[in-house]
Length: 367
Image (cartoon, rainbow, N blue to C red; front, side, top):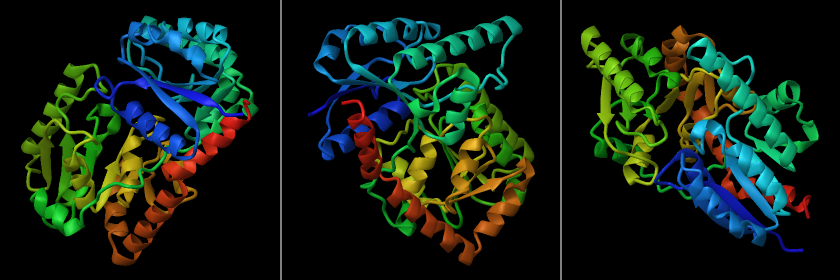
């Protein structure tokens, strides 16, 4: 029996990470003969999704790409969406791109923290009740859902984010010439927020050496708190200037995303991608590094540790002060060659084509 799948996710104009992921997934599914359509909406505007609800009955499977506040309105629209989906007669799959542990420390006052935890707790329960299958990108997310929220382990499937196979990557020498950089380049790129820990690297710039390349979009779509982003960027620039680290650090602040060739030129030019993340989150930047076969040095959050247990494409810093030592070690020719080889293995084993095959098997169990 042929299945029809509706992939539900935000538009590229309103959100970059999950939308990019979903577009590649739909493309790979159709390539693997899974009849898949995209149903998009504006992130933060739930009515743009609900107006498309009339189309859902045409599909056998509704696949929701989820993040807690993706629909806006303090996540409340999710409490309407899932009961409505149960009335459509379709099977429901939810991919949870982030899974919040009840042990996670949240910023804010006591009342705000309590309300956020309550909303996320109830939302996870609703997702569990109304989803036939829940997909996460790491095993520690599965543990959180099963141990803290009562999900059946059999309902949860772990699939990695897919790796883009046809990225047009120019040779490294050419890429460095295009972005006007010489010598080693250590790249920090993406949504420039405190949780991504660029300041951890900047404080050690004198020990790491040049060039630490910071590529930040001053008006990133994914972060709706523009003031926070601007303040953090300004504080990092000031710190580098005040400490006399400008000879080690270069800031490229410009509108940029993965739809532009320049984005990929930065990855091609980099010798390492640095991801000193704080908190238990996943990373689309890591998948882009693997797509360009660029080794990664990252923090010891569970997401990176889980990958490092199986692949040598990433080295994890146990302590914040370990980055200079680790970077120096992995840049030794023999070690670096091994990491590049592991990047190739990771990209091959987790390509979008391979990931789509796994999705196809999961969909078939709902027939």
